[in-house]
Image (cartoon, rainbow, N blue to C red; front, side):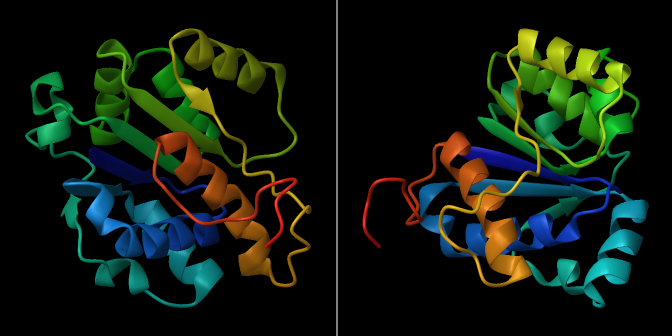
Length: 186
């Protein structure tokens, strides 16, 4: 499996951090992972999490405008793209096929190749424009996975709460993880 993770400037850096932390531990389940992170996403991460640890992950980083990145073409055969958090602006550009940067181009490629696109939408409330854009992405084959945590597992920290979303994303991506399962004892 080849994965691309895009981190946009929406609030919710904790979701991106926890996803990357878990992907480090799951490296035996994929052969390649590329990261695209906007400058705004870096600033939001530093503001929300108080550090710049996004620089420390053992994955390959690509500039937001690097159209020579492998996943800018369907021939590279990336299987899955996760946009976390996904801003409404990014979602709108993806929904309408506006490939003006590497994030939107990669999403366009994933959709046209009928591969797995997971958008972790992080905004509230939704306007009708947001909902229509989510509908367009869904009709095109993408998966909208709002950053809406669950409470079944009785999370005790913000990180545990955010992990309920991240674990759902990893499940949707097809990775084998250990997590709370409804109806199963821990």
